[in-house]
Image (cartoon, rainbow, N blue to C red):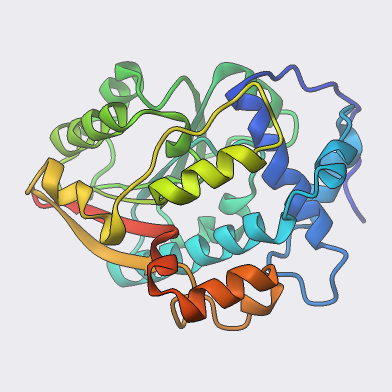
Length: 278
């Protein structure tokens, strides 16, 4: 039987409000016979939130794009954890995502870090336990680093889906270098877009009170250029096999054509696994 949550109005604005877009996308995906992401909890949360989600439908937001992004990242993260064995996973900006439900069994411990108002909302639907911890704050804060430094055992795996976009390039550069210093040997999985696609994304972005800022060059070449002690372990470009096998038909026709006819289109969207050597 589906869980019934108490009705709540989400007190979110600016960047935190953007978490409602992928939530809506995953809930919408559940109506498909073969959903990209199986997430029945998403619809239960949608039903409990006093929010006008029809705005995303009326603005023709491509729900499947968000689900495919999560699917690709889930696949990569699963491979990493199965290869390395259970380890601490630290996820930035989980919003109302259910990645722990899907992949938590592969990790030794799962820690979720998000803005205080987001964590307060998140705790209405998800509950911390011995294997799952929720911390309030920005990923840029030093406080959580001080708290977790030396407590993770093996170098942790960090995850940031749909998060880096709202920070500047200098902020992300400095942040990655801090992760390397505070958590030697750690790695991070994140997504990014090209400079050109960043401009297109801002034109299509459905929430006017938040703006996307971050982009990367092809093959994520900026990362080792910023710091030679950070290497790219995995790079998944748009349409790359086997990651996109079975889902390309869900994209808009012009995206399918672009990735076939224009090789640079592969770098319009990327999922990156970067690792610290020290």
